[in-house]
Image (cartoon, rainbow, N blue to C red; front, top):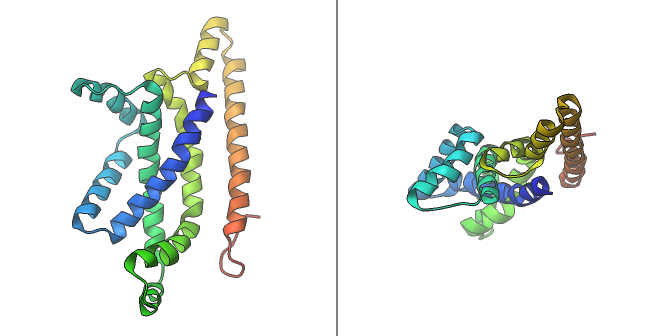
Length: 205
């Protein structure tokens, strides 16, 4: 349940962060682009494990204590969102400039253009990359044990230390992760088919 709680919070927020960062790096002014780029470069450059340790132990040196659960959630959101932003940014760049010109010709503001014309198309194009990162996020969740979160991997280690049955315990853990990811894959394929535009985009059969 702890693993599911971490994923239920971090997945949707990381998607929103990825879209926001990707959009900011394309349409933001110099300051906004700089801040967004700094976030992306930093958290794409740090291993997830290092990010978790910095949040949990590093911030405590400044008198900021983040509970283990929220350390994991924040770390996963920052890392996954940074990677997802690259898919969104690439998707935005791939949209023909004629779309923007058409939006302006009918009197749309820049914000309306981005919200109603560019982002709906960009999210469709970036969807496979985003879902791939979300699947990775399920695997990243096993790293939460390093800051004391009692998620699936931590519990499995405890069982193994009690009963000394590594094959059975870790195989069971692997099967649980496999089932979780398989359910996500089926779910994402359903969304992909609903988002597809016949004759324009290919969907996963």
